[in-house]
Amino acid sequence: MKNVNVVLGLFYGDEGKGKIIDYLSKKHKYAVRFSGGNNAGHSIEVDGKKFAFHLIPSGILNKNVKAVLGNGVVIDPKVLIEEIDNLKANGYSVDNLYISDKAHIIFPYHIELDGMLEDIRKTRKIGTTKRGIGPAYCDKYERCGIRMEDFISNKFKELLKENVKNKNVILKAYGYEELDFNKIYKEYSKYAEILKPYVCDTITMLHQAIDSNEKILCEGAQATLLDIDFGSYPYVTSSSPSIGGLSTGTGIGARYIKDVIGVIKAYSSRVGEGPYVTELTDSTGDMIRELGHEYGTTTKRPRRCGWLDIVALNYAVKINGVTAIAMNHLDTIGKLDKIKLCVAYKYNGKETKFFNTNMDFLKNSTPVYEEFEGNFGDISKCKSFDELPKNAKKYVKRIEELTNCKVKYLGTGPSREDIIVNG
Ligand code: GDP
Ligand code: IMO
Ligand code: MG
Image 1 (cartoon, protein in one colour):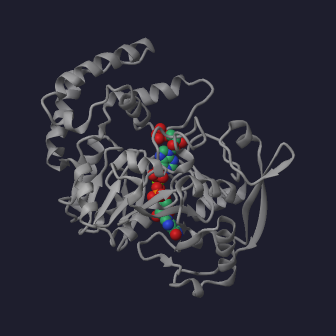
Image 2: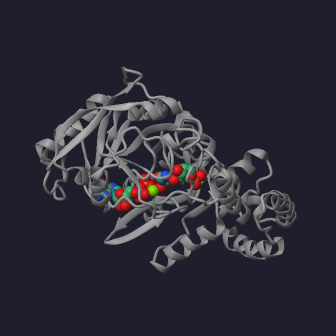
Image 3: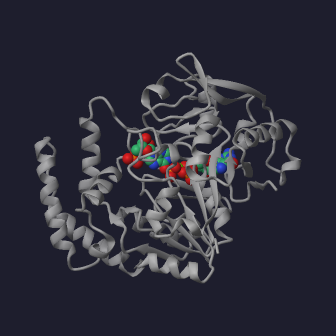
């Protein structure tokens, strides 16, 4: 039985995954984060209350859902404990939180190194979130990372001592302040005690769920164009936020996957450095930023904004095997008089519909647009596709035509209820 569904981002992040995951998780028994760390920021609005999750799975607000942090996630214990405390303070139980014993831990030296590496990069500054994500994944692959099962065991002290010693050599070499092992150990062993009750073998847990025909929703963080392999390298994150990351980050095999819901906005945005073919650096871009409140959930940085890009979207649809699209911010784009949709790129005098993450290609491609009428009016009361104004329908139908994919969910506002299920 295929009981595993997936929600993941198709562009450069912040597509509104959190809202869609919260909405869909109520029909699932498990909500599982499979990659990234607290570089993510997922906003959810419920009964007028706003939540911003960085680590905790966005499905947690549904109390019948078991919220799982999979083995592919990198965990900053301090941030996770803050999120747990915040949920408790808002009257939510976290008894339904489970943390993989194989997830890696982010330590202060990762955060320090993230900042240092960004400082010393001369030509290719990435604009990371400075949350220690890249260095934590480097340690995982270098095989000196500390996993949750070691963090909560009596091996922790020795492992940490060796790592702090080795990282201090690097920090010193670049003229950065060395870190104090005793201070970190004292602080982090307290965090280990707090998190210990949540740690378990999530791989076996999910395998048992599959055997019991229970429904699992896997939730992506970041997005396809930030993927370490398929994104605009080197301006990417250090994990696999696209479909491949689901299996390596949870232990769930591909044969159990049913629906792959790819999330986009009716326009696009990007935070941090890197090429962005449909970026608008003019007053229209500023207007989209203000209308869509496009400021980072994690770093508060203003997001770069632009038109929706079908060339990039079709690439992401193929990479992930997307079965349906969820498109947020239909309300926002409908406030503009005219809307543009990028249907091809012009590169070296030739038109192409195929995306490629080659830097020269992305930096020198110019978008070819189709234009649509905006002014949708107030669509907040529309509860079905048929109730939408004709300009909105025309825009959505053209996207379906160009991607050969159903736009099954349409976002008409930031709240849990602001979703139209199309068909
Ligand atoms: P995520 O990282 O993909 O979960 O997205 P973020 O939460 O970082 O950014 C999405 C932003 O858009 C948040 O502020 C959401 O509250 C907001 N949002 C999501 N869907 C809609 C929508 O359909 N309309 C409007 N106006 N806002 C939305
Ligand atoms: P959600 O899950 C948008 C971007 C950073 C930077 C690059 C590398 O909210 O969609 P990192 O700290 O990961 O090494 O930074 O990736 N980035 C995101 N941009 N949304 C995110 O997550 C992001 N997570 C990382 O801005 O350009
Ligand atoms: Mg976000």
